[in-house]
Amino acid sequence: MSESLDDFFDEEWLNGSQLRDETVLIRDYLAGDMTAQTAAQRIAQSLQSRKTPLHDGQYDLSELLNNTIVFAVEELPEYHDALVTLLGEMKPQSDTRQFESGLGHALGERWLYVDPDIRLADRQDYHEAWFNLNHFAALVYKADVQDLSDFGFRTLWLALKRGRWHVGWDVPGSISDSMLAFEGHFPAAAHWIALCGQRLYNENNDVKGKWAEWEGNLDWVVGQNDLNDTIRSQCKETLAEMRRISPTA
Image (cartoon, rainbow, N blue to C red):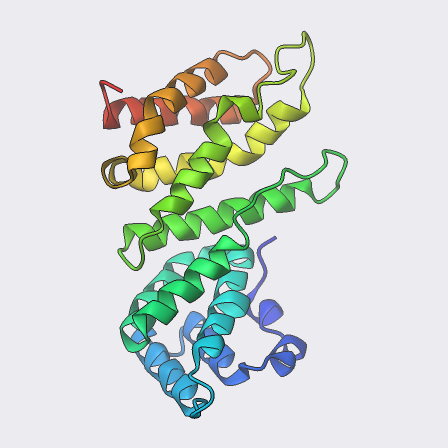
């Protein structure tokens, strides 16, 4: 799924963007042509120049977050750290409420993961896009750019709520749709726990309230015979980290 910067920021897309100047600044920053601070300052200046008495700029900022930055998150995972750094520089130069609302909306409308039909040839692309979104959101949360712990909770709930995927799992010799769905969900959940599980547990009461249940569910998953070996290994590592975070859960 990953593209080159030139392929992602192609002229056809740039020319069709209402925020071409700001998008070009993001491209140039990711290419290493300027610092995050410089890019953020120029983006803020460009957005400011668009404001009028009847146009406060909220839509422009939301549009940039949604259709450029979070879109890039899905397609350019190797630039996640750089994009988090850029957001960290952009936020102080923006209206905080507008910034947090825009980023929350951009992520929120993508946060309803529906596992694709197993017959789809691009099923793996769906899994990668879901992981990329979660990888980025967890980095944003870890870096204190914005509290996205509720997104972490929803991803853990999707992956570890047993009722979502246990149906038909224990059919002898069958790799059920539910198992394949779990294998699509789980890497994203594992990343949240590995990167900021302790903080999620400490700061989000919904996460803390479900921790023991999720830990028990994951322990059950590890014992399933038909589980993909790679996912099983990741499950074991995640289970060990969950027990470390809350030994008495």
